[in-house]
Length: 298
Image (tube, rainbow, N blue to C red; front, side, top):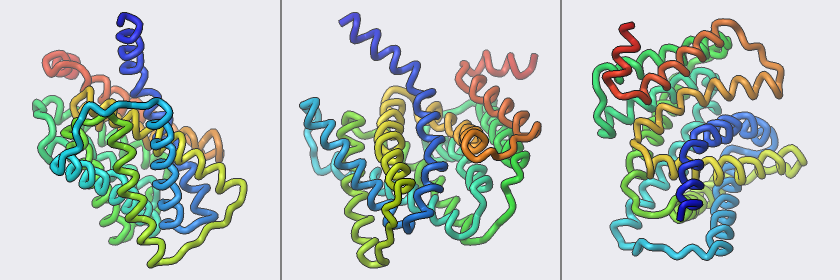
């Protein structure tokens, strides 16, 4: 029992770091994958692959569900799956498809911590709301410094807003599902697979099975859609929705770092300053309200 408690405690502390590294890498491999496949074909393969992988893990570890799958719970799982695995993913891809720059999409998605609270998540003091706004301004500064706000289109902005709404509301629904992250993720990806397969049959199929595409698809299935999603569900289950969603402030900044490593994208001083503001805001947000306000006023 002591060893199990230590392992769970260690995972709880390590989960945010692993999640950020896994989730932030997604944009790089999505970019690589879409060079050889249509949006809907890529989403279909991603969701189906994640569903099958989670199913194999479920069977191999012979997990005994402690939750009876009632119609009420199943309905919540389906709704959450549509929000997190279908609408969020599809609207994100479509916002970029309709010529909105990835940097501006990241700024819009940076609204998630604020929107999670506004949509009925956790109560936040005025100090913590101020911290969220400061973090969002730091995110905007980091993106602006990367010179990645070149294009703005009405459809692109609309899809980006719909995307952040989907993941914000979906995170709140996920908190109410009394199932293990693996069970919930498997069922949600199953629902998403059905939706994306049907969409691909209607719209059409396009995939070029190049080595780059196979690698990017494998990364998205194993690392992002399975590893990162299970960690996200685990953190939501053990923490408040707003504490988990504030981690998304760091996602675009880490994505820029991966861009720098892989594609040699320039990182400016302005971006570094914005990143430091974001990191400070996340640290302050994790403190009790009284300590956070004292640090801000000191």
